[in-house]
Amino acid sequence: MTATVVESTIDVALWFMDQARREDDYLQPQKLQRLIYIAQGSYAATHHGRMLMPALFVAGETGPQDPNIFRLFEHGRPTNLGEPKIPAETLHFLDMIWRRYGHHSSDYLNQQIKHHDIYARALKKGLGEEIPFPAIVRFFTRKERPSVKKVKTADGRVLEKWMPTAAPGPTKA
Image (cartoon, rainbow, N blue to C red; front, side, top):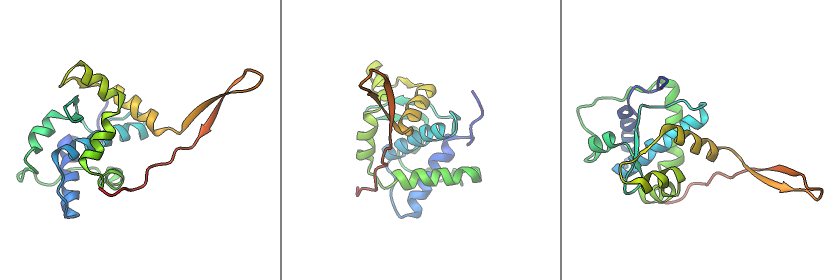
């Protein structure tokens, strides 16, 4: 395993909790779980498979979860943990994740992630089944790339037609 960018998943969770508090918002434990999962996958997709944080995701009833973060944050932000230690170059990335997904409800994020095939495969094996990091990388890398449609020409050749994808705009939660 290569070195992670952030030393602890706790720091990323604290950053999301503090960001919600700065915006006078309450971050539900389920939503926190989805945000750290999305952050892990998105970082890997945009940084050649590099791990953002040393997180382990398992199939929970409502979606992927890091059991340690779940246990630590299930009743809110622990008061004795201090400030998160996030490298300056990573703050912009976390802010981008927050701006893109932070306004969505936990129900919305749960519904979106329940359709991830890697989560469905792990859940099919049972609650608590690990979602391997390489599978997360493959899934998010595939999701982040523009769509490619195969087109068969009149003479029988198969061509790939690039289809740009549109990122969903902000929705009201």
